Length: 567
Ligand code: WTA
Image (cartoon, protein in one colour):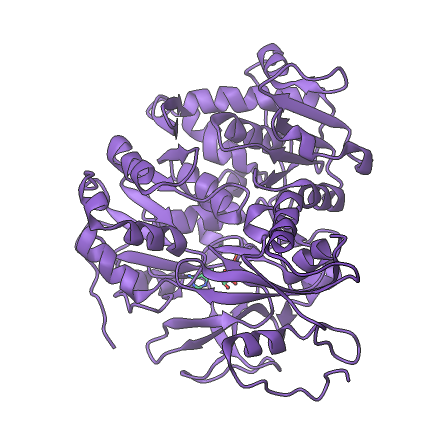
């Protein structure tokens, strides 16, 4: 097995083995206010603490770039603006525990509003700006969201008549109708002074919806305690130092964009680059060159696209500021690691974690030799193993469930409104990830695949049930089954099998219409790239769609056990 030795450099932690040996999470708590006061607010720790430090208040907290639009805020400015947002929300009646959702593109005010929510002790629910009607409605309804902050452009996707709990809507970028609130007006009227609501570390902070193989997306509910791990992994794994200019490419509608687009960098007092606009290799390289990004956290899909764009594009920018590059969300192809080393002169460090885990668990920390293709090893304070379905730990080199001993700080609190679902994640005190993996003799973990039907397309998880439900709303579709199909660039693409209602005939136009129906109803990334018309959908006798069978057929694999197949 090829091992790549760590590249030289000065890191926050040089002796990981020693750190692991003496480590206890409770010691980490000393770094935060609750160790002395017993009370916490993650917004205070991430923003106000730095703003109140004369040596840091004028340091740039945020650099925002979207095309030619550029905005820079110091920690002091971020504190003031988020205090205004906190006062704005308070004036609308937001109190502890309320769910306040953010549905807007990445922009500095997203972050001000996010912290404004937390400062009130309320729970933030960020939504991808790409979500369409149904996706927005499902999440707002399930969470019982009370307040929504959105933009004029996205507002039409919010069907208020279906959302009785939604009391107030604040709109950016326009003078809204009388029953809505104007963001600018409220912000301008709001004071820059606000005392954060002091909370218990178990109090709720964040709701991220993620897809499962059954049912609608589930609300993964995180508590303020998660920030200990955001801070720790920001320090040990992202290796953030206060002088770093850090860029996480993930959208805050996804957990990476909050845990590591907000908390990791700001709890560590780094400067955080926020990119708006669409992905192009040129725009991304320009971002690194212009702002002299030192630490870059991105995803395999993006790296594959950058590699496909060619070495010349990379070489036409000055990327020499980069010190440390990391990846998350999908398997990181060894070729990409070799390519990046050649072209960027940097090795890419893979990290593994999930929406439910709240923060990194298995990583290639800066001083660990990289085995290309492996996800790395557990961070200090985390015990991971491969277990069988009964919860027994398996020896090295055996495939099984990738599992983690419950109790790390950023572990989800529950699934919103569904304790049963939450409980179903655990066997014998192990959190079972749903991923299958192997561990080698050195304790490195190797990803194999998802054990359920969840599709990972360009690093975004898509639940087949959600797409199938939408498909059958189309007048031409009777039944639908959706699978993930391997794809070089996207990891997987979505393929839908459908049966047609009487009176409808297969045509390219119809298939395109159905694809657009999903794109407009759910989101672009959930729209099937391939649609095949079939005469029937394979189901078990109890009526469950046998996606496994469709996948095997599609890939020309053995069909396996078909004894439960209905006649
Ligand atoms: C997959 C993302 C391989 C995995 C933070 C997991 C990975 C799911 C890796 C969670 C990795 C994440 N290598 N696969 N380094 N990281 N995954 O909830 O299947 O959007 O269960 O959170 O992505 O996706 P989620």
